[in-house]
Amino acid sequence: MSDGARGGTFRAALSHRDYRLLLGGLAVSDSGNWLYAAASIIYILDVTGSTALVALSGVVRLLPFVVFEPLGGAIADRYDRRKVMIASDLIRAGLMLVLTFVAMSESTSAVYALIAITFVSNTVSTPYYPAVTAITPSIVPEDDLAAANALSGTIDNFAIAFGPALSFVLLLLGPPPVAFALNALTFLFSALMVSRMHVRGKVGDVEVEASLRSRVVAGARAIRGSKETVLLVGLVMAFGFTFGQEIVLFGPISEEFLGMGLDATGLLFAAPGVGGILATGAAARLASRSHTAAILTIATLVSAIPIMALSVVRNPAAAYLLLTIEGAAYIIADVVSTTTLQRVVPRDHIGSVFGIVGSFAVAAIALGSLVAPITIELFGLAGAAATAGALLLTATVLSLPGARALDRTAAARLAELEPAVTAIGRLDIFEPASPAQLEALAAVATREVIAPGAVVIREGDEPDDLFAIESGSVEVTKAGVAEPLTTLDAGDYFGEIGLLHKRPRTATVTAVTGSVVYRIPGADFLRIANEGPRISTTLLAVVSNRLAASSVQDDPDPA
Image (cartoon, rainbow, N blue to C red; front, side, top):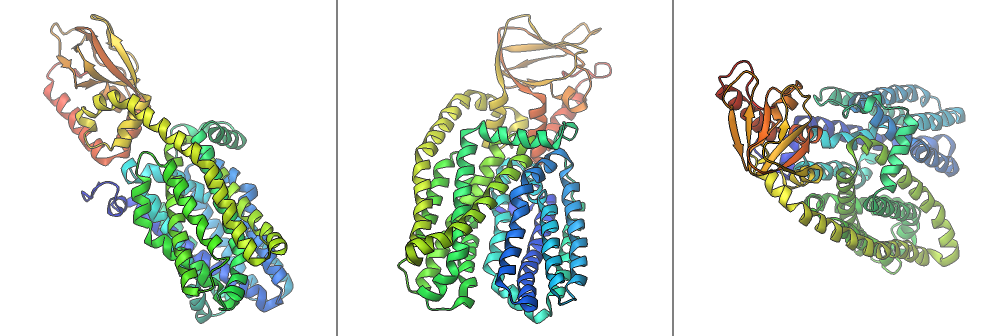
């Protein structure tokens, strides 16, 4: 890390230049989106006075995420993610400028034009957030990933917490077209920030893989193929369903139960945002742990209690406190689920998976919003609030056995990987690696027993893997050189130079005694090395020293 910050902290996550640029652009554009959403409602009501058109606008706002976000996630996997984000920002900026001029007309046709532009704008935005989530593991190392996700989640919570204040500022700034113009500027600013990022937005050769449809299918298979992923997606949907009900319930609760009037509804939405901000640090620490399934289900359990309690609570201060607790639990669940998915999903499928998850989550929100009026009609307002919490509580209780099983599986897997983790961790190039990075390498490494005299690497072969010696010794020789170049023993490694320089092996490595080595796939080795600046620095120093120490012909070192 550039400033020596301890891994896993917010300071460490922010020490990465590309992440600062990504977060800065996200913060500004999200703030602009809040102004845009509030201005849209104000504009529709000013022109038509129709709450039905406001509701229609809300449905249209959500619809692209339900229908097109899986495709947006596939786009984020298929193409350069950085370019995808820039294109999305620029197109949305253009649409907001068009809307600025459209909204200068106070006519019903202009309102329908606004709704249509909203649909197009949100459709264009569907690849953006999967791209953000998918590119984050490429710009921060594994040990800073949870902190980075927590900071990104805090952006949303700030918008929720201070939304009422932004709405007030909006009224001071002028009519809705001013907000639309400001939103266009926020998208341009975001595009500028992302364009300055150095990270390459593609993952391996994913950009040449078949069709977008195949990407969506691959994402669906990645979800179905992992019990942990299915559990996470199920809990995300349960959260969304409850939030959708709260969107409908908070207004009547504010007016009928708390005696504050409909105008204070925004304050009920602000309370979870404040809780999310307060719990950001805890969320990052909890998400960085190895076993997170139980943490996620407990957080979900806690978040179900406040909405149930609002069925009997009549004190505004108590209601705010309960919803603050809900927001704290939610940010923990959100960061844990996002970080866990980033860890368990193959990197070339992250965008597709998050596109599908986003679609399911928004569909669950929409379904919750549709169900809430029905439960109010059937059970009354208090019964509807209790039902909303009870459904989430039930989903959480049902998921607990699965969560415990997953954590037991994870613990058993770690115990199985321990010998490989120990052997790989002894290598000087991986001394700066986090435990999670070592576990990832150990998971893909294969343990091989080498007989005396067996050739492990042959001069002239194409480079493929890195080898770590657990026991025994190997001899490095080169054609035309009588004496061995060197002998490597337990705790040493070989094969890195050919991988780094992408050229045929320049020496032959033969087992002197019976040896045990761990074979690490070259692609995984290079990915982990590139994730951590300190690993890369150490690796390059070792390679330089090995080359410098050799005086035999043109390239005597093993690789």
